[in-house]
Image 1 (tube, one colour):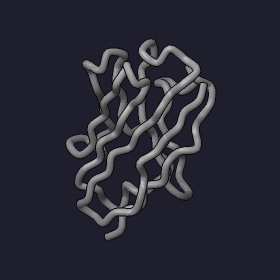
Image 2 (cartoon, rainbow, N blue to C red):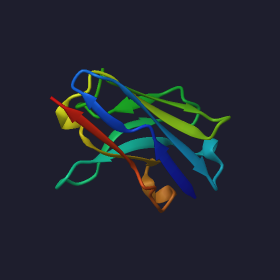
Image 3 (cartoon, rainbow, N blue to C red):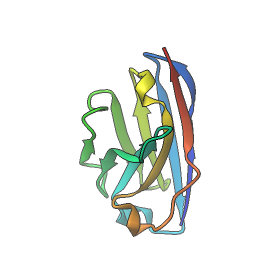
Length: 116
């Protein structure tokens, strides 16, 4: 499997970003997908997940109401729409299957930096 995340960048607090993750090497629509993040000095943590059809989503409490996950099965792509960004959202963001062991590997991630 190949996971290619993109869309990260540097924004000020209160700003927005949209992350994308293109998946190849697997039948994308057969997998529950999720976004994870890892801040410096911290363990990787779950951010948001979406079921196979895109009809159900779930979020970490820290991002609920600010982030939205979506997917396009025709494009083998999952998205993370991030609004009202906070400095504590600064991290490298990764997409993967949920659970990640279903894919067995990680992409390079995309850096998000939020300044106050």
